[in-house]
Image (cartoon, rainbow, N blue to C red; front, side, top):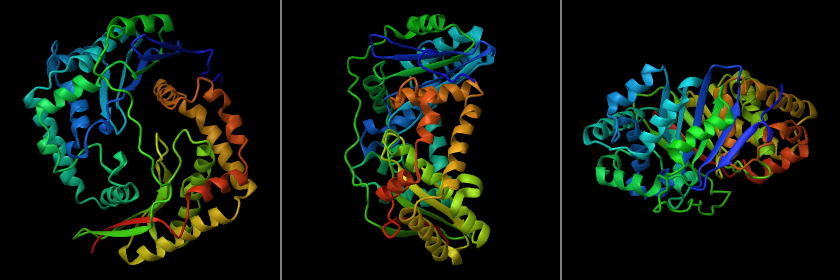
Length: 420
């Protein structure tokens, strides 16, 4: 299998700052879009929580050329999909259509991103949906533990302390004027990424995109906002959130890990896999769930991202077993930072990481998602071609150093949500 590389990925940057990546897969009949632009929650104040989310969510609900029904009937008539998302750093979008319908898909994408109207009735419906979701989550112990963990591990001066979705207190205060102003100021072509993968010639795809986006210029669009500096070792603390009527406690414990672009990201990622993902949730799952039978689930996650992302360990347990599970997870983290992983453990995970890559590239969706990440994190067009060598260069000592840099089993942030 030939992996996408600098010779087969067609990259074009328009004068307005928009970057287009095209990868041809002529053996398919469809085409997939994946993209983003810098208009996430990092661009507004904490007390405006949910502003970027409502703006992104309102894009597909009406434009100056199409109302809600016309947008969706245009897509349904050709069997196409188009959705928008939101995050801390960016708003995102994705779509799919038959290759012959790419012009229509790009036309609708340009219309909803550039010309939304944000009608009052549609925004109120969207606001109501978001508030209902948040109210429902107030009874979800896993979500409550995760939210509290994030608030403890990131200080109030950091954008990651806050949810991009907003809160029950902030969402009702967002006005139509704020949404329209946010769109006018932060939506623009500079920093926008659009990936196209499918049965289309690269030159044709670029020409179609240029037809709808090359003239887009927003003089008010500010530079990309950077994250403030943060201590990689937040002070250890523990907090309990009581939720009456629950029979399970959810534990989130951890600290800050590397960003996606950190030199030791891959070493930390393999260490995380050994700790809490590989097989039946790694060493943590083996000890806590399989051997001791103390958890409904137990594992770990390394967020990465523009970062530093959280490195978290989680478990769902009987309330009577909370402290025992915390102690067992600490023991496995202590083992990871005091002794190198075995050669066999490393080899198994290297094989797993490199072996799953072709599976991720089996679909146009998978290719588009990875190419978008490559551009977003500036990994280079040959990232996939060199990935195997990157992973197999890692040694047990590399994983040990990465774990020691970020993990301290005696200084962890711990959040527990469950019955009082």
